[in-house]
Image 1 (tube, rainbow over the protein chains, first blue to last red):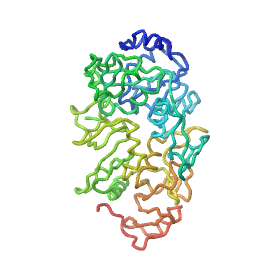
Image 2 (tube, rainbow over the protein chains, first blue to last red; image 1 turned 180 degrees about the vertical axis):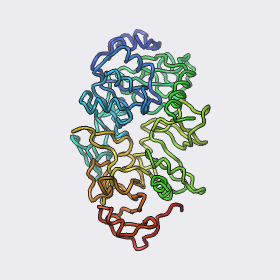
Image 3 (cartoon, helix red, strand yellow; image 1 turned 90 degrees about the vertical axis):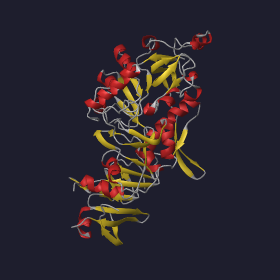
Image 4 (cartoon, rainbow over the protein chains, first blue to last red; image 1 turned 135 degrees about the vertical axis):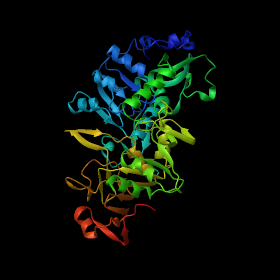
Length: 253
Length: 221
């Protein structure tokens, strides 16, 4: 367990209120940490958390993200590469961030690729107490190198191992102080799965709401997976950020 | 007509009404523009949605509604959004009827390479994304590519680049020809107007047989 979120403190009643500041939530993050970042090319990404990581300057990070940053802009996880905070990227696709590709080509960062379906199942296994996952994806390609192959009921599979992180930084829409997280639209993507696989899960939300405000059926991540709830961009700002991003990158007219 | 448009128009013919379809980056996304009126698809986007529609106008965009390229999209009535594990249950679990993907290379064994080129010695980019899962899970795989590059044929005896999946391609569409991939190898089924079988042989490294009913490259169904 990460210091500051120990089982003893939780038992003392701290679990009743997980709302905290980003400064406090990241108080004990260390150089060399392995971090998961929710979002898909910046959509559903915890933007304020990323800004805070850059501000703190924590480095030698192993970053686990399903794909790389929003193409061609200084947005989201591109900022981590821009500040040279990354040592290794674990992802299914690196190509949308030129800074990362340059750092990879010159040896500053390492990249480990997994097929996207495998990537998300490794994380799900990591959060779900499973020993691994069998998948036929990647058989006969470079992906199978160094991995065990198993034949089950006459069909061949690769054994892919669980993936966890010191911190899972996720983005939700609304969260309550217990840590229940509601999601919105395609900002779901990797967030609910990553939420289960961090030793410390920090959920950045557009709105922090009263307990009971997120209906049980609307809970995308049940409270127990979450250690900290932090205020992200209020929803109107959140809207504007993406509108501006899309106008800037000429995705919308 | 530009090569990209030809390929997109021809690829659209491979898709049937009501199909669940995943369209890859680049030329394949244009396929949705060339569907005949009687063909409606259920488009799936790997980042987690089903039944998405065209780019919204300014004012209708939503920060949490985007495709796998993080471009704004609209959602049609009956659309669903879901997380990445569910998305790949759809993809890997065999619920995608057809996928159209751009290829760097294809070969006569139905292998496709489209995920890695050397960025520097021992370093590959950009990565496979959802392509490997799609190729393994989709019931029909349509590979699109330009017939040749400056270095020559892109339809090879054996792919040189790291392959994305083995033996999965069903149809190869270039701007000059269409091949079906069978257990016995490639079959040339269509050629564009103005070219002969010999012309195609001279620009294609892979072995292929010519279909008995080889015909003109179709641009609409």
